[in-house]
Length: 162
Image (cartoon, rainbow, N blue to C red; front, side):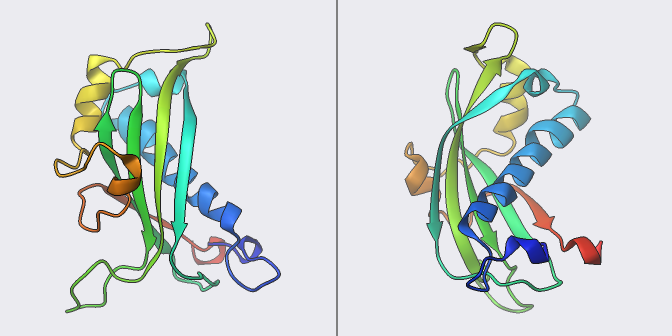
């Protein structure tokens, strides 16, 4: 989280939430995939759809906010993911913690040289299946409401606190 993320109303601007989602996607599709020797995503992927439900205002503080992300659907040529932007629960507390936003994105693998969508490779599919929520419904917006889905978590840290 950065001081500049806030708007004139004193909370994190709605557009900045999209940047937080982008950082989580980049971490999964580029860093984690590359570490697993899956390099196809570096050839291109485009966002086909975003959906965000803002649950409560998020204001600047030095502690990072957590972005949890999981795969809700693997198609032949598309990937649906869901996210929660939140604080983790307090020690001894049940539930997801304080949730600031729930979101869903549809991503399409893309061949940048040809300028066309492409199908997922076997390696990409096998990599993403590790993050698939077995209980996710077919609809991305329904999956965005799943509070306990498995996934990958990352923190959007304050630049001053790193």
